[in-house]
Image 1 (cartoon, rainbow, N blue to C red):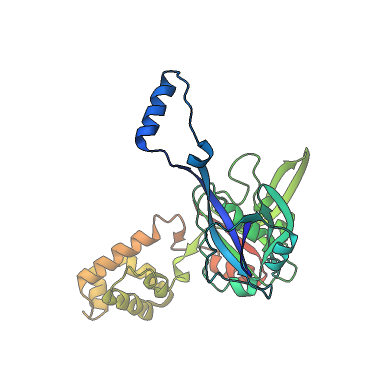
Image 2: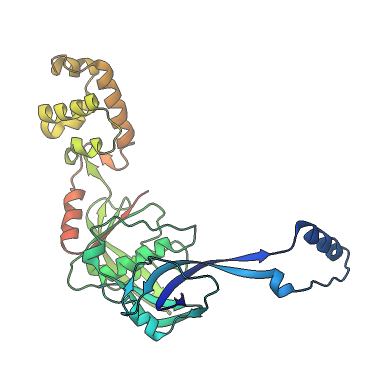
Length: 328
C-alpha cells in the first residue's frame, strides 16, 4: 500500500506487481548479450536511466480535503511523488468498521497494527468474486472468514463451504491448519462428508506444539434422498427446455414425493400413457437421460435414505454455524 499526493487530494494505491523496464534497443541487447556470452566486459552508460523497475498499482481510494475516503474519481498527475502509508493514512481508510475480522494491513513487507474487518450485514447479501492465480490465497481468505464467523458469539451469520479439494477441514498438507483445528469447531462447525454413515460426532486428533488435542466435530453423511428434491432444483440449472420443465412439474403433481423415482424407473411408454399422451416420448427420454446425468451413480443422491441433510443444514445455518461440505 502506498499513497500519492496531488494537490489537495491523496490517493491510496495497492501495488500488486513489479515489471522490469528497458530502454535498450533490440540491437543493443543483442550486442551486450554476445559480449556477455564470450566473457567480455562491457560498459552500459546511464544504466539507472535505461534499466529500471516499474511498480504496477491500482487506486483503491482517494481522500479529499475533508479527510473522508471515497472511491477514486480521478488519477494523480504524472511525476507525483509516491510514499508509504503512515498511521494517519490507515486511520482515514476506516478499515476496521465491521464484525468479520480479516487480519491486518501490510505496508511493504511489514504488518501494521491497522485491523481490516468487514460489515457482514452489508457484504453477505451480495455476490463476491475472489479471484487470483494458484497460491494467491483464495482458500486462505475463505478460512479466515469462516473462522471469524465461528468465533462470533452473536450467531448473526452462517457460511456454507463446498470443498472440492479437501483442504478446509484439516488443511491440504502436513503442517497446514484447517477449520477442525480451531477451538470453536466443536460448537460452530458442521461437517458433511461421505466418510460417515449416520449423523454422529467425529473425533479428530492432532498435535500442536507437542500436545495431543482432540476435537469433537458434529458430522453428517453426504447423502440426499430423491424425496427431498423438487423440480425447481433441476430447472434452475438452465439445462431443461420449457416442455421438459413442464414434464418435471407434471410428474411432481402426479406422483408427489415419489415423482423422481417414478420418472426414472418407469418406462417411457408407461409415462406416455399415464400423462394421457400430453408429453412426447422423445421429451420423456431426454428428461430421463438428463436426470440420470445430474444424479450421478448414487454417490450422493440416493433413492432412499434415513437422514435429511437439507433439514440438518438449515438447522445449522439457524445456529450461525459454518457448514463444510466435503465433495468427493
